[in-house]
Length: 245
Image (cartoon, rainbow, N blue to C red):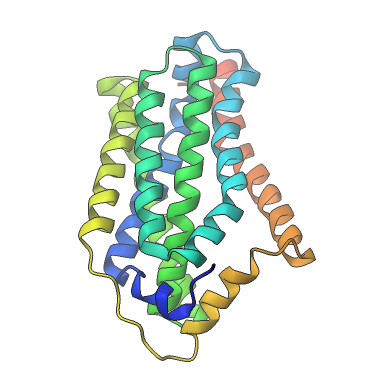
């Protein structure tokens, strides 16, 4: 049986811990794309398989969106974030140890699943801490934007020093930091503010396969497709056309 808003709020993460977790989670999202040419060369992948390295991640994330919404509505953001960080850590370590295409794609799907749990838990916690929709989404977008930018920067540094495996080991380290933050952070107290209950209601509504949900999933596909053009297809094309890694 699903828990009510009071239970969910008792397991919500405090705002500072939430923004830290969101930033680190999206650090792990964007850190991989610059390494694709090197991964392709190291594992002997063709262009299609190299593209699937990112597609597997976003496929895992997309498929996990509904289970993530169900889990965060029933168990709360904090347990969801703990599970998400653990799954992301396992996926990152498996990716670092992968010696072939199949193992790497499975690991990337696990990473995507973990990030979906973390993003859903983080978004609900931000909405509960900042019920005003504009403030909540601004905080969310700033956090994930900083994380993504740091990921793109760190990717080159890590790859030059430790190879492409170093990117995934670092993602595992960041996952451990997120797991620790979720475990030690005190759950945020429930607050009777107008927007707080609506955040729980919105997540509960996600359990139904409504036209709105299907439309949101279709929008997700379009967003991920646009993302792939710039952060997946472009690096692979540059590597093939100009020898840029």
